[in-house]
Image 1: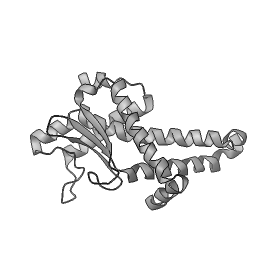
Image 2: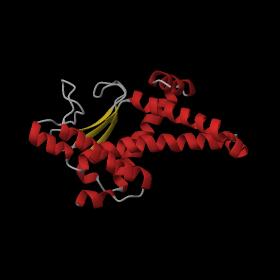
Image 3: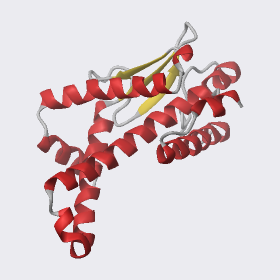
Image 4: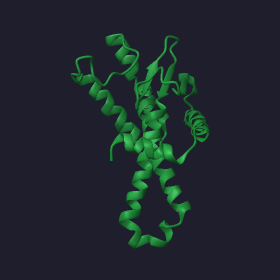
Length: 192
């Protein structure tokens, strides 16, 4: 399924008002994670770029600001595509497992819960990925070596930068661990 289809499938199920409330709820959810992990001293703000002025389509990034604070920015299109993907994966589950688990899965509440868990896992993974760019010192490293306050996966010429690739893999590694375990203590990684 193409990204455009995933995006459109998600748009079909919710009104703009519901989607706007969900985006606000997501910002609060991410801020709660920062509070739970005692990371307030890092001065990280969360922003869903509804007007798409700070982030490219279907993307998210962490940025170091001038006053030694940070911002994690999400494009709403990315969140909508992820919702469409979680809907698609839930439908695939229905196709493959209905014979085994028909009664339980045909309960719409169970399908909605599964779709919600998949969506939450994906968005948490992206959030943790961007958070670990901050916690692991990736942004400070790039600022000190290249005068960049944001991580670019590719340079202007589209050549992969080896250290940027390493930073992406490093952030993914810790995001994967934290997304799966959920209660993983981020401070242990930060302090070490």
